[in-house]
Image (spheres, rainbow, N blue to C red):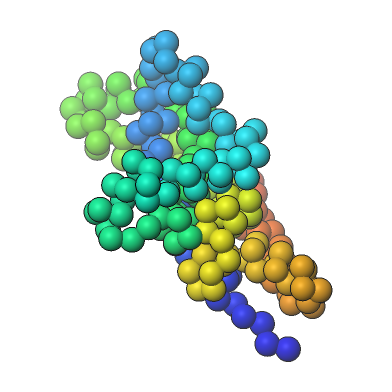
Length: 224
């Protein structure tokens, strides 16, 4: 029995790219949400949290419409790149960025809110530049929030099904991620292959979570 692991590598690639991009994009947004007094804050928080309650197929359906070359976003993308977003790896990345957004923003925002503005303002008063104050003071003190956000985002991206199926379809080595591959094996009654891929995913997810919990336990001991 030969097991095609290309879907696993594609899934890991997708999860790493999405986690890295969201870490870069969500951090300043989470910082703003943590300290802003704008009346728009509840509205923006609700929009960010939508993927938590919205059925993945609904989100995938509207993204598929937006990715259509006849739609404004899809047409603009096609003019810039020459390729369509629907049923492409790039489309999976954009869809996953939106679908996993709350898993990155919320833990970081909560960490910033718990920390408050005092450490940042103290660093500025001692002559540190804003970026330096963030990197040397705020980031280390909020590291557990960043770690939680990255792990949740990575794990959530790996487990995506409805959104990636709607947006990417089932193209080998292009959009066929591991959740789609498992579903395909089950649908064709290839339970042995489904067991192996599911087992790999289960073990990988367990080891990731175990590492995070072990780190948090050691962190509490060291702090205590």
